[in-house]
View 1 (cartoon, rainbow, N blue to C red):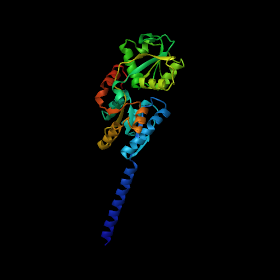
View 2: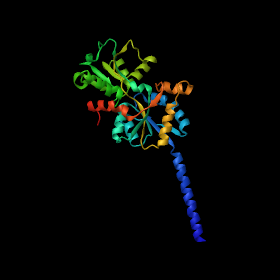
View 3: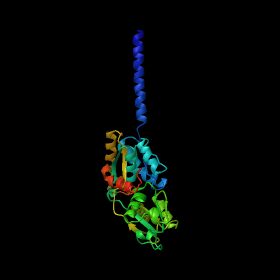
View 4: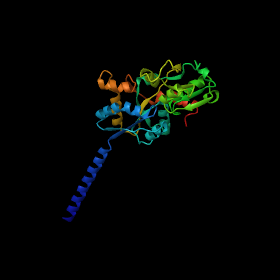
Length: 289
């Protein structure tokens, strides 16, 4: 009798433990999302809000936005699995993939990211009309880990036989694309290099006057941004996330709003091989560690 009570007690304990474990697992069903801080924190949060709500409805789980302080933090949080889904630039994806031993997977990218470009801007009256005119001038990049705000602009400068660290009077890093525009517009620097998408958004929203600040060089195209996850994420969840992005349709009100905020016509599948050119450019520039 005592043995049967002991067995029954143990059984109840096992059932309770399993129930608690199940409840804990359910409580942890949160998709933690971040993005490289290439724009102001308030702008990034505004852009993500409707996308987060959409993902919650598609995935059946809570989606939590977690801002990071800089590009390096975005890389480390995904590599260390503190974040589940991240919006990376091409260079930060390469950094994360190298740091993780190839364990970071790009799920989707915007169609625009197949042929992304950077622009070099200056004040209209600066006298700067081509890359060669930058010699002896001051120039602001964005973040040091930015693809479109540093790596690729630097790469194209080097291809034009201009070493920014030798041929320019001073090189600065603003930290973000919108800050680069502000630095040029205020006269803090003679020129700046940034993401063409942010530039076009500022012009469209009349936050910059192209008669006062102009584009004097647009780079050739290259692959850039993507949404990435760690390879240890369950495949079923990875596929659900990918499917949710691919299902965004600009003909629906919800799809139109989300794609508009993401500055995308649509999302398409991505793959690590797309970023081999970015990796080569980073190695050639001595920026990949």
